[in-house]
Image (tube, rainbow, N blue to C red; front, top):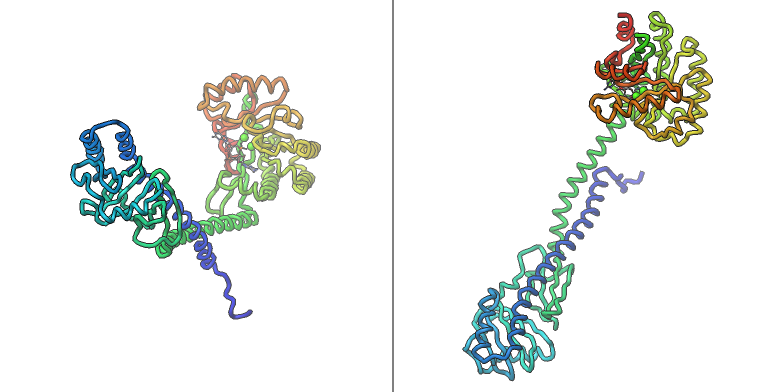
Length: 489
Ligand code: C2E
Ligand code: CA
Ligand code: CA
Protein backbone atom coordinates (compact mmCIF):
# COMPACT_ATOMS: atom_id res chain seq x y z
CA UNK A 1 0.00 0.00 0.00
CA UNK A 2 1.44 3.42 -0.88
CA UNK A 3 2.45 5.19 2.33
CA UNK A 4 1.19 8.62 1.25
CA UNK A 5 -2.55 7.84 1.13
CA UNK A 6 -4.15 7.93 4.55
CA UNK A 7 -7.48 6.11 4.94
CA UNK A 8 -10.54 8.30 5.59
CA UNK A 9 -11.24 7.86 9.27
CA UNK A 10 -14.69 8.44 10.75
CA UNK A 11 -13.51 11.69 12.37
CA UNK A 12 -12.14 13.01 9.10
CA UNK A 13 -15.43 12.27 7.36
CA UNK A 14 -17.31 14.13 10.09
CA UNK A 15 -14.97 17.14 9.78
CA UNK A 16 -15.32 17.27 6.01
CA UNK A 17 -19.12 17.03 6.17
CA UNK A 18 -19.20 19.67 8.93
CA UNK A 19 -16.93 22.01 6.96
CA UNK A 20 -19.13 21.87 3.86
CA UNK A 21 -22.36 22.06 5.84
CA UNK A 22 -21.02 25.01 7.83
CA UNK A 23 -20.21 26.88 4.65
CA UNK A 24 -23.82 26.57 3.51
CA UNK A 25 -25.24 27.41 6.91
CA UNK A 26 -23.03 30.47 7.48
CA UNK A 27 -23.70 31.78 3.96
CA UNK A 28 -27.39 31.34 4.47
CA UNK A 29 -27.23 33.02 7.87
CA UNK A 30 -25.31 36.00 6.47
CA UNK A 31 -27.74 36.44 3.60
CA UNK A 32 -30.83 36.24 5.76
CA UNK A 33 -29.50 38.37 8.64
CA UNK A 34 -27.83 40.88 6.29
CA UNK A 35 -30.96 41.28 4.26
CA UNK A 36 -33.13 41.85 7.30
CA UNK A 37 -30.69 44.46 8.70
CA UNK A 38 -30.67 46.20 5.34
CA UNK A 39 -34.45 46.30 5.21
CA UNK A 40 -34.75 47.73 8.68
CA UNK A 41 -32.22 50.53 8.02
CA UNK A 42 -33.77 51.41 4.67
CA UNK A 43 -37.21 51.51 6.23
CA UNK A 44 -36.00 53.72 9.09
CA UNK A 45 -34.39 56.24 6.75
CA UNK A 46 -37.41 56.38 4.55
CA UNK A 47 -39.62 56.91 7.56
CA UNK A 48 -37.37 59.59 9.04
CA UNK A 49 -37.27 61.64 5.86
CA UNK A 50 -40.57 61.02 4.21
CA UNK A 51 -42.98 62.09 6.95
CA UNK A 52 -41.68 65.63 7.49
CA UNK A 53 -41.05 66.01 3.73
CA UNK A 54 -44.73 65.44 3.00
CA UNK A 55 -45.76 68.01 5.58
CA UNK A 56 -43.32 70.55 4.15
CA UNK A 57 -44.67 70.06 0.62
CA UNK A 58 -48.21 70.34 1.91
CA UNK A 59 -47.44 73.64 3.68
CA UNK A 60 -45.84 75.08 0.56
CA UNK A 61 -49.07 74.83 -1.43
CA UNK A 62 -51.15 76.83 1.03
CA UNK A 63 -51.07 80.58 0.49
CA UNK A 64 -49.75 82.02 3.68
CA UNK A 65 -47.93 85.03 4.89
CA UNK A 66 -44.24 84.75 5.67
CA UNK A 67 -44.96 84.65 9.41
CA UNK A 68 -47.56 81.89 9.01
CA UNK A 69 -45.23 79.81 6.86
CA UNK A 70 -42.46 80.14 9.43
CA UNK A 71 -44.88 79.04 12.17
CA UNK A 72 -45.89 75.97 10.19
CA UNK A 73 -42.26 74.95 9.52
CA UNK A 74 -41.46 75.57 13.18
CA UNK A 75 -44.33 73.27 14.15
CA UNK A 76 -43.00 70.50 11.83
CA UNK A 77 -39.56 70.78 13.45
CA UNK A 78 -41.03 70.67 16.96
CA UNK A 79 -43.12 67.61 16.14
CA UNK A 80 -40.20 65.71 14.67
CA UNK A 81 -37.48 64.76 17.10
CA UNK A 82 -35.00 63.93 14.32
CA UNK A 83 -35.32 67.25 12.60
CA UNK A 84 -33.15 70.28 13.39
CA UNK A 85 -34.29 72.77 10.82
CA UNK A 86 -35.92 73.45 7.46
CA UNK A 87 -34.84 76.00 4.85
CA UNK A 88 -36.17 76.97 1.47
CA UNK A 89 -33.37 78.23 -0.77
CA UNK A 90 -33.86 80.16 -3.97
CA UNK A 91 -31.42 82.10 -6.10
CA UNK A 92 -28.60 81.39 -3.67
CA UNK A 93 -30.48 82.84 -0.67
CA UNK A 94 -32.46 81.50 2.27
CA UNK A 95 -36.10 82.45 1.66
CA UNK A 96 -38.12 80.66 4.33
CA UNK A 97 -37.12 78.81 7.44
CA UNK A 98 -38.52 77.62 10.71
CA UNK A 99 -36.59 80.50 12.29
CA UNK A 100 -35.75 84.12 11.44
CA UNK A 101 -31.96 83.90 11.52
CA UNK A 102 -30.24 83.74 8.14
CA UNK A 103 -33.38 84.65 6.16
CA UNK A 104 -32.45 86.60 3.06
CA UNK A 105 -28.78 85.77 3.67
CA UNK A 106 -26.64 84.22 0.96
CA UNK A 107 -26.09 80.46 1.40
CA UNK A 108 -22.67 79.37 2.73
CA UNK A 109 -19.99 78.52 0.16
CA UNK A 110 -19.99 74.87 1.11
CA UNK A 111 -23.70 74.60 0.44
CA UNK A 112 -23.36 76.55 -2.79
CA UNK A 113 -20.91 73.89 -3.97
CA UNK A 114 -23.37 71.17 -3.02
CA UNK A 115 -26.05 72.88 -5.01
CA UNK A 116 -23.73 72.72 -7.97
CA UNK A 117 -23.44 68.97 -7.54
CA UNK A 118 -27.14 68.74 -6.95
CA UNK A 119 -27.94 70.25 -10.35
CA UNK A 120 -30.76 68.30 -12.01
CA UNK A 121 -31.33 65.68 -9.36
CA UNK A 122 -34.70 65.73 -7.72
CA UNK A 123 -33.30 64.85 -4.32
CA UNK A 124 -29.92 65.00 -2.75
CA UNK A 125 -28.49 63.57 0.41
CA UNK A 126 -25.28 64.44 2.10
CA UNK A 127 -23.62 64.29 5.43
CA UNK A 128 -22.17 67.40 6.93
CA UNK A 129 -19.52 67.30 9.57
CA UNK A 130 -20.62 70.74 10.62
CA UNK A 131 -23.98 72.06 9.63
CA UNK A 132 -25.32 75.53 9.96
CA UNK A 133 -25.70 74.94 13.73
CA UNK A 134 -22.08 73.86 14.05
CA UNK A 135 -22.71 70.14 14.78
CA UNK A 136 -22.69 67.00 12.57
CA UNK A 137 -25.86 66.34 10.66
CA UNK A 138 -27.22 64.65 7.64
CA UNK A 139 -28.92 66.83 5.15
CA UNK A 140 -31.66 66.09 2.73
CA UNK A 141 -32.44 68.39 -0.18
CA UNK A 142 -35.15 68.22 -2.73
CA UNK A 143 -36.10 70.44 -5.61
CA UNK A 144 -39.25 72.42 -5.21
CA UNK A 145 -40.61 75.06 -7.57
CA UNK A 146 -37.76 77.25 -8.71
CA UNK A 147 -35.78 76.60 -5.51
CA UNK A 148 -35.13 73.71 -3.22
CA UNK A 149 -35.82 72.64 0.33
CA UNK A 150 -33.06 71.73 2.68
CA UNK A 151 -33.94 69.63 5.75
CA UNK A 152 -31.33 69.15 8.41
CA UNK A 153 -31.61 66.00 10.55
CA UNK A 154 -29.67 64.84 13.59
CA UNK A 155 -27.03 62.40 12.41
CA UNK A 156 -28.23 59.78 14.91
CA UNK A 157 -31.53 59.49 13.03
CA UNK A 158 -29.81 57.42 10.34
CA UNK A 159 -26.89 56.10 12.36
CA UNK A 160 -26.03 52.47 11.63
CA UNK A 161 -26.58 50.00 14.45
CA UNK A 162 -23.62 48.01 15.74
CA UNK A 163 -23.56 44.66 13.99
CA UNK A 164 -21.42 42.02 12.32
CA UNK A 165 -22.37 43.45 9.00
CA UNK A 166 -21.05 46.53 7.24
CA UNK A 167 -23.56 49.00 5.94
CA UNK A 168 -23.11 51.76 3.40
CA UNK A 169 -25.58 54.46 2.69
CA UNK A 170 -25.02 55.94 -0.72
CA UNK A 171 -26.79 58.78 -2.50
CA UNK A 172 -28.32 58.25 -5.90
CA UNK A 173 -25.37 60.01 -7.43
CA UNK A 174 -23.01 57.50 -5.89
CA UNK A 175 -21.63 59.44 -3.00
CA UNK A 176 -21.03 57.72 0.28
CA UNK A 177 -23.26 59.25 2.87
CA UNK A 178 -22.53 56.97 5.79
CA UNK A 179 -20.55 53.80 5.93
CA UNK A 180 -19.85 51.22 8.56
CA UNK A 181 -16.44 50.74 10.09
CA UNK A 182 -15.10 48.39 7.44
CA UNK A 183 -15.41 48.19 3.73
CA UNK A 184 -17.87 45.70 2.38
CA UNK A 185 -16.24 42.41 1.40
CA UNK A 186 -19.16 40.30 0.27
CA UNK A 187 -22.18 42.32 -0.79
CA UNK A 188 -25.34 40.82 0.62
CA UNK A 189 -28.25 43.17 0.11
CA UNK A 190 -28.99 46.35 -1.72
CA UNK A 191 -32.12 48.48 -1.30
CA UNK A 192 -32.69 51.61 -3.32
CA UNK A 193 -35.04 54.18 -1.87
CA UNK A 194 -35.97 56.15 -4.98
CA UNK A 195 -38.39 58.35 -3.03
CA UNK A 196 -35.56 59.76 -0.93
CA UNK A 197 -32.77 59.21 -3.41
CA UNK A 198 -30.44 56.87 -1.57
CA UNK A 199 -29.34 53.27 -1.50
CA UNK A 200 -28.58 51.12 1.52
CA UNK A 201 -25.99 48.42 0.87
CA UNK A 202 -25.26 45.71 3.40
CA UNK A 203 -22.40 43.28 3.21
CA UNK A 204 -19.91 41.41 5.32
CA UNK A 205 -16.17 41.70 5.44
CA UNK A 206 -14.19 38.52 4.85
CA UNK A 207 -12.82 38.79 8.38
CA UNK A 208 -16.32 38.85 9.85
CA UNK A 209 -17.48 36.04 7.56
CA UNK A 210 -14.58 33.93 8.84
CA UNK A 211 -15.74 34.69 12.37
CA UNK A 212 -19.33 33.56 11.59
CA UNK A 213 -17.96 30.45 9.87
CA UNK A 214 -15.80 29.53 12.84
CA UNK A 215 -18.60 29.83 15.38
CA UNK A 216 -20.96 27.83 13.13
CA UNK A 217 -18.26 25.22 12.53
CA UNK A 218 -17.85 24.54 16.24
CA UNK A 219 -21.62 24.16 16.71
CA UNK A 220 -22.17 22.08 13.56
CA UNK A 221 -19.24 19.76 14.34
CA UNK A 222 -20.49 19.19 17.88
CA UNK A 223 -23.97 18.36 16.55
CA UNK A 224 -22.54 16.09 13.85
CA UNK A 225 -20.49 14.20 16.43
CA UNK A 226 -23.62 13.74 18.54
CA UNK A 227 -25.63 12.62 15.51
CA UNK A 228 -23.01 10.12 14.43
CA UNK A 229 -22.73 8.75 17.96
CA UNK A 230 -26.52 8.38 18.06
CA UNK A 231 -26.65 6.61 14.66
CA UNK A 232 -23.84 4.32 15.73
CA UNK A 233 -25.69 3.45 18.91
CA UNK A 234 -28.92 2.70 17.07
CA UNK A 235 -27.10 0.58 14.47
CA UNK A 236 -25.14 -1.32 17.07
CA UNK A 237 -28.28 -1.87 19.14
CA UNK A 238 -30.02 -3.18 16.03
CA UNK A 239 -27.03 -5.42 15.29
CA UNK A 240 -26.96 -6.67 18.87
CA UNK A 241 -30.66 -7.35 18.66
CA UNK A 242 -30.18 -9.35 15.47
CA UNK A 243 -27.34 -11.29 17.12
CA UNK A 244 -29.57 -11.88 20.17
CA UNK A 245 -32.41 -13.13 17.94
CA UNK A 246 -30.10 -15.57 16.17
CA UNK A 247 -28.78 -16.82 19.51
CA UNK A 248 -32.36 -16.98 20.84
CA UNK A 249 -33.40 -19.18 17.93
CA UNK A 250 -30.39 -21.45 18.40
CA UNK A 251 -31.00 -21.79 22.14
CA UNK A 252 -34.79 -22.24 21.83
CA UNK A 253 -35.44 -19.08 23.78
CA UNK A 254 -38.72 -18.44 21.90
CA UNK A 255 -41.32 -20.43 23.74
CA UNK A 256 -45.10 -20.77 23.59
CA UNK A 257 -47.30 -19.43 26.37
CA UNK A 258 -50.81 -20.85 26.33
CA UNK A 259 -53.95 -18.87 26.90
CA UNK A 260 -57.08 -20.95 27.32
CA UNK A 261 -60.18 -20.61 25.13
CA UNK A 262 -63.23 -21.31 27.27
CA UNK A 263 -66.63 -22.68 26.22
CA UNK A 264 -69.44 -21.09 28.22
CA UNK A 265 -71.80 -23.90 27.24
CA UNK A 266 -69.44 -26.77 28.08
CA UNK A 267 -68.06 -24.88 31.07
CA UNK A 268 -64.50 -25.90 30.28
CA UNK A 269 -61.45 -24.96 28.21
CA UNK A 270 -61.74 -26.34 24.70
CA UNK A 271 -58.62 -24.83 23.20
CA UNK A 272 -55.65 -22.55 23.72
CA UNK A 273 -53.83 -19.86 21.75
CA UNK A 274 -50.05 -20.07 21.53
CA UNK A 275 -48.59 -16.68 22.33
CA UNK A 276 -44.89 -16.26 21.77
CA UNK A 277 -42.61 -15.33 24.66
CA UNK A 278 -38.86 -14.70 24.54
CA UNK A 279 -37.04 -16.27 27.42
CA UNK A 280 -34.27 -13.74 26.86
CA UNK A 281 -30.87 -15.37 27.65
CA UNK A 282 -32.77 -17.40 30.23
CA UNK A 283 -32.89 -14.22 32.36
CA UNK A 284 -36.31 -12.71 31.77
CA UNK A 285 -39.51 -13.35 29.86
CA UNK A 286 -40.19 -10.75 27.16
CA UNK A 287 -43.70 -10.19 25.74
CA UNK A 288 -44.29 -9.86 21.96
CA UNK A 289 -44.68 -6.07 22.10
CA UNK A 290 -40.88 -5.69 22.39
CA UNK A 291 -39.81 -8.06 19.62
CA UNK A 292 -42.60 -9.45 17.42
CA UNK A 293 -42.46 -6.61 14.87
CA UNK A 294 -38.72 -7.10 14.42
CA UNK A 295 -39.23 -10.83 13.98
CA UNK A 296 -41.97 -10.21 11.44
CA UNK A 297 -40.05 -7.53 9.52
CA UNK A 298 -36.88 -9.60 9.35
CA UNK A 299 -38.72 -12.77 8.33
CA UNK A 300 -37.31 -14.56 11.40
CA UNK A 301 -40.88 -15.12 12.55
CA UNK A 302 -41.06 -18.11 10.17
CA UNK A 303 -38.36 -20.00 12.06
CA UNK A 304 -39.80 -18.88 15.41
CA UNK A 305 -43.30 -20.11 14.47
CA UNK A 306 -41.95 -23.50 13.32
CA UNK A 307 -40.12 -23.65 16.66
CA UNK A 308 -43.37 -22.94 18.54
CA UNK A 309 -45.17 -25.65 16.53
CA UNK A 310 -42.42 -28.16 17.37
CA UNK A 311 -42.73 -27.35 21.05
CA UNK A 312 -46.49 -27.75 20.81
CA UNK A 313 -45.93 -31.19 19.21
CA UNK A 314 -43.86 -32.12 22.29
CA UNK A 315 -46.34 -30.55 24.77
CA UNK A 316 -49.34 -32.27 23.16
CA UNK A 317 -48.93 -35.40 25.29
CA UNK A 318 -49.32 -33.30 28.47
CA UNK A 319 -52.65 -31.90 27.15
CA UNK A 320 -53.84 -35.32 25.98
CA UNK A 321 -53.64 -36.49 29.57
CA UNK A 322 -56.18 -33.79 30.53
CA UNK A 323 -58.37 -33.31 27.44
CA UNK A 324 -57.37 -34.98 24.12
CA UNK A 325 -59.94 -32.88 22.21
CA UNK A 326 -58.30 -29.53 22.91
CA UNK A 327 -57.36 -27.49 19.87
CA UNK A 328 -54.45 -25.08 19.49
CA UNK A 329 -54.31 -21.78 17.75
CA UNK A 330 -51.14 -20.28 16.25
CA UNK A 331 -50.62 -16.74 14.91
CA UNK A 332 -49.60 -16.55 11.25
CA UNK A 333 -48.94 -13.44 9.15
CA UNK A 334 -49.86 -12.93 5.51
CA UNK A 335 -46.18 -12.58 4.62
CA UNK A 336 -45.61 -16.06 5.99
CA UNK A 337 -48.46 -17.39 3.87
CA UNK A 338 -46.98 -15.77 0.77
CA UNK A 339 -43.70 -17.57 1.43
CA UNK A 340 -43.93 -20.95 -0.35
CA UNK A 341 -40.96 -22.37 1.55
CA UNK A 342 -42.70 -21.66 4.86
CA UNK A 343 -45.98 -23.24 3.70
CA UNK A 344 -44.05 -26.33 2.55
CA UNK A 345 -42.29 -26.57 5.94
CA UNK A 346 -45.64 -26.40 7.73
CA UNK A 347 -47.05 -29.17 5.56
CA UNK A 348 -43.98 -31.27 6.28
CA UNK A 349 -44.45 -30.55 9.99
CA UNK A 350 -48.09 -31.68 9.85
CA UNK A 351 -47.13 -34.86 8.02
CA UNK A 352 -44.50 -35.76 10.59
CA UNK A 353 -46.67 -34.95 13.62
CA UNK A 354 -49.90 -36.93 13.30
CA UNK A 355 -50.64 -36.35 17.01
CA UNK A 356 -51.71 -32.80 15.98
CA UNK A 357 -54.11 -34.00 13.30
CA UNK A 358 -57.36 -32.01 13.37
CA UNK A 359 -56.40 -29.86 16.31
CA UNK A 360 -54.55 -26.96 14.69
CA UNK A 361 -56.02 -23.56 13.96
CA UNK A 362 -54.06 -20.76 12.35
CA UNK A 363 -54.98 -17.15 13.13
CA UNK A 364 -54.60 -14.49 10.48
CA UNK A 365 -54.79 -10.98 11.80
CA UNK A 366 -57.19 -8.64 10.07
CA UNK A 367 -54.76 -5.80 10.80
CA UNK A 368 -52.39 -7.01 8.08
CA UNK A 369 -52.28 -4.65 5.11
CA UNK A 370 -51.32 -7.33 2.61
CA UNK A 371 -54.84 -8.67 2.20
CA UNK A 372 -54.45 -7.11 -1.26
CA UNK A 373 -52.76 -10.34 -2.37
CA UNK A 374 -56.07 -12.03 -1.88
CA UNK A 375 -55.79 -14.76 -4.50
CA UNK A 376 -52.29 -15.88 -3.37
CA UNK A 377 -53.40 -15.76 0.26
CA UNK A 378 -56.51 -17.77 -0.53
CA UNK A 379 -54.48 -20.38 -2.41
CA UNK A 380 -52.11 -20.93 0.54
CA UNK A 381 -55.02 -21.01 3.00
CA UNK A 382 -56.87 -23.61 0.92
CA UNK A 383 -53.74 -25.73 0.63
CA UNK A 384 -53.26 -25.76 4.41
CA UNK A 385 -57.00 -26.27 4.88
CA UNK A 386 -56.70 -29.44 2.83
CA UNK A 387 -54.04 -30.57 5.34
CA UNK A 388 -56.48 -30.17 8.21
CA UNK A 389 -55.69 -26.63 9.36
CA UNK A 390 -58.69 -24.55 10.43
CA UNK A 391 -58.57 -20.81 9.87
CA UNK A 392 -59.47 -18.03 12.29
CA UNK A 393 -59.70 -14.34 11.45
CA UNK A 394 -58.02 -12.53 14.33
CA UNK A 395 -58.78 -9.05 15.72
CA UNK A 396 -62.02 -8.81 13.73
CA UNK A 397 -63.25 -5.23 13.39
CA UNK A 398 -59.85 -3.53 13.60
CA UNK A 399 -58.33 -4.14 10.20
CA UNK A 400 -58.17 -3.47 6.53
CA UNK A 401 -60.09 -6.36 5.03
CA UNK A 402 -63.62 -5.61 4.01
CA UNK A 403 -66.39 -8.06 4.59
CA UNK A 404 -66.41 -9.06 0.95
CA UNK A 405 -62.71 -9.95 0.97
CA UNK A 406 -63.17 -11.91 4.14
CA UNK A 407 -66.05 -13.83 2.64
CA UNK A 408 -63.84 -15.07 -0.19
CA UNK A 409 -61.42 -16.72 2.25
CA UNK A 410 -61.85 -20.14 3.85
CA UNK A 411 -62.44 -18.71 7.33
CA UNK A 412 -63.84 -21.11 9.93
CA UNK A 413 -64.03 -18.92 12.98
CA UNK A 414 -63.94 -15.22 13.86
CA UNK A 415 -62.09 -13.75 16.80
CA UNK A 416 -63.81 -10.47 17.64
CA UNK A 417 -61.36 -7.86 18.94
CA UNK A 418 -61.54 -7.01 22.60
CA UNK A 419 -62.32 -3.34 21.99
CA UNK A 420 -65.92 -4.35 21.27
CA UNK A 421 -66.41 -5.90 24.72
CA UNK A 422 -64.19 -3.64 26.81
CA UNK A 423 -66.16 -1.72 29.44
CA UNK A 424 -63.95 1.26 28.59
CA UNK A 425 -65.78 1.62 25.25
CA UNK A 426 -69.17 0.90 26.76
CA UNK A 427 -71.43 3.29 24.84
CA UNK A 428 -70.27 2.53 21.32
CA UNK A 429 -69.26 -1.08 21.61
CA UNK A 430 -72.33 -2.80 22.98
CA UNK A 431 -74.57 -1.88 20.07
CA UNK A 432 -71.85 -2.65 17.51
CA UNK A 433 -71.14 -5.99 19.13
CA UNK A 434 -74.82 -6.94 18.86
CA UNK A 435 -74.72 -6.11 15.16
CA UNK A 436 -71.47 -8.06 14.62
CA UNK A 437 -72.96 -11.09 16.35
CA UNK A 438 -76.15 -10.84 14.22
CA UNK A 439 -74.09 -10.59 11.02
CA UNK A 440 -71.80 -13.50 11.84
CA UNK A 441 -74.83 -15.56 12.89
CA UNK A 442 -76.34 -15.14 9.43
CA UNK A 443 -73.05 -16.31 7.94
CA UNK A 444 -73.07 -19.20 10.40
CA UNK A 445 -69.56 -18.33 11.54
CA UNK A 446 -68.66 -19.20 15.13
CA UNK A 447 -67.23 -16.42 17.28
CA UNK A 448 -64.54 -16.22 19.90
CA UNK A 449 -64.84 -13.14 22.06
CA UNK A 450 -61.35 -11.87 22.87
CA UNK A 451 -60.22 -10.00 25.96
CA UNK A 452 -62.98 -10.75 28.44
CA UNK A 453 -61.65 -9.45 31.73
CA UNK A 454 -64.58 -8.96 34.09
CA UNK A 455 -67.79 -10.56 35.31
CA UNK A 456 -69.75 -7.72 33.66
CA UNK A 457 -68.08 -8.37 30.30
CA UNK A 458 -68.77 -12.08 30.62
CA UNK A 459 -72.46 -11.44 31.28
CA UNK A 460 -72.59 -9.31 28.09
CA UNK A 461 -71.10 -12.27 26.22
CA UNK A 462 -73.64 -14.65 27.74
CA UNK A 463 -76.46 -12.26 26.93
CA UNK A 464 -75.39 -12.34 23.25
CA UNK A 465 -75.20 -16.17 23.34
CA UNK A 466 -71.49 -16.17 22.41
CA UNK A 467 -70.07 -19.53 23.38
CA UNK A 468 -66.28 -19.20 23.07
CA UNK A 469 -64.37 -16.74 25.20
CA UNK A 470 -60.69 -15.87 25.65
CA UNK A 471 -59.48 -13.39 28.22
CA UNK A 472 -57.84 -12.71 31.53
CA UNK A 473 -61.13 -13.49 33.31
CA UNK A 474 -60.57 -17.20 32.59
CA UNK A 475 -56.83 -17.41 32.12
CA UNK A 476 -53.75 -15.36 31.44
CA UNK A 477 -51.15 -16.69 28.99
CA UNK A 478 -49.03 -19.22 30.90
CA UNK A 479 -46.06 -21.52 30.32
CA UNK A 480 -47.03 -25.12 29.57
CA UNK A 481 -46.44 -26.51 33.08
CA UNK A 482 -48.37 -23.74 34.75
CA UNK A 483 -51.21 -23.98 32.21
CA UNK A 484 -51.63 -27.78 32.40
CA UNK A 485 -51.54 -27.51 36.18
CA UNK A 486 -54.24 -24.84 35.99
CA UNK A 487 -56.35 -27.00 33.63
CA UNK A 488 -56.20 -29.89 36.07
CA UNK A 489 -57.24 -27.84 39.10
P1 C2E B 1 -53.27 -11.43 19.62
O1 C2E B 1 -53.03 -12.50 18.61
O2 C2E B 1 -54.50 -10.61 19.47
O3 C2E B 1 -53.21 -12.10 21.03
C1 C2E B 1 -54.00 -11.71 22.10
C2 C2E B 1 -53.27 -10.76 22.96
O4 C2E B 1 -54.18 -10.20 23.88
C3 C2E B 1 -52.18 -11.41 23.79
O5 C2E B 1 -51.15 -10.49 24.02
C4 C2E B 1 -52.91 -11.69 25.09
O6 C2E B 1 -52.04 -11.77 26.21
C5 C2E B 1 -53.77 -10.47 25.19
N1 C2E B 1 -54.96 -10.71 25.97
C6 C2E B 1 -55.64 -11.86 26.10
N2 C2E B 1 -56.70 -11.69 26.92
C7 C2E B 1 -56.68 -10.42 27.32
C8 C2E B 1 -57.49 -9.64 28.21
O7 C2E B 1 -58.46 -10.10 28.79
N3 C2E B 1 -57.17 -8.34 28.37
C9 C2E B 1 -56.09 -7.80 27.75
N4 C2E B 1 -55.81 -6.53 27.96
N5 C2E B 1 -55.28 -8.49 26.91
C10 C2E B 1 -55.59 -9.80 26.70
P2 C2E B 1 -49.63 -10.86 23.79
O8 C2E B 1 -49.34 -12.25 24.24
O9 C2E B 1 -48.85 -9.76 24.40
O10 C2E B 1 -49.51 -10.83 22.23
C11 C2E B 1 -49.68 -9.65 21.54
C12 C2E B 1 -49.75 -9.88 20.08
O11 C2E B 1 -48.49 -10.35 19.57
C13 C2E B 1 -50.74 -10.94 19.65
O12 C2E B 1 -52.03 -10.40 19.62
C14 C2E B 1 -50.24 -11.30 18.28
O13 C2E B 1 -50.68 -10.38 17.32
C15 C2E B 1 -48.74 -11.17 18.45
N6 C2E B 1 -48.18 -12.48 18.66
C16 C2E B 1 -48.05 -13.21 19.79
N7 C2E B 1 -47.45 -14.39 19.53
C17 C2E B 1 -47.22 -14.42 18.19
C18 C2E B 1 -46.61 -15.36 17.30
O14 C2E B 1 -46.20 -16.46 17.68
N8 C2E B 1 -46.55 -15.05 16.00
C19 C2E B 1 -47.00 -13.84 15.51
N9 C2E B 1 -46.88 -13.57 14.22
N10 C2E B 1 -47.56 -12.92 16.33
C20 C2E B 1 -47.67 -13.22 17.64
CA1 CA C 1 -54.11 -14.10 17.88
CA1 CA D 1 -56.51 -11.01 18.75
